[in-house]
Image (cartoon, rainbow, N blue to C red; front, top):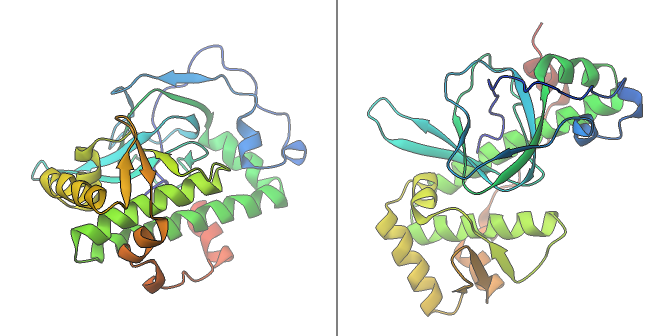
Length: 253
């Protein structure tokens, strides 16, 4: 859901200088190329819900779970930041969720004020930035639709279908997808119990739709059936984002 979570982690010492100017940067990801590579160990926290937002991050490897703690103590995972994601784009002054490493994560960071200055200095980067915000809106809408589905099977299949789509978008259209998050993570993300998630995975396996490949991967045996069970054909089209409104919302003056 919310890949727009900002960060409040202090900047590391010895930070390499960012690129001199925006015109030579081909994309938003290029803004991070001069930044030091950082590692986050499994279970370690990158930033906490309520921390002040100071950085934008590019995830190069691994998965971060983004979660919120409700007043009654329950945990809700609002999304997973994975390879290729940029998190921290939202204009919130404080982090709206906690980011915790599911497995080993490699990333780079840039100060939000520097990121903003570089994107605003380049029309091309401004367009990329607006497009990224639109993707965040689309992801939030997709998660809302996923949680609105009544059946556990449809939610789980929708989640798996999205993982397949991410693999394809990342240039890895293999029949086996990585799934480093635990059943508890998936349950907290889909608003289900861990027993329901486990039972659904078992049922899909018995029907030949999926097959476990080790502890953290799944083989998709019948992708067309998975898409049908996810209700993919019934999903409403997401309207194009209003770029002017998105830009004003992103960097209010």
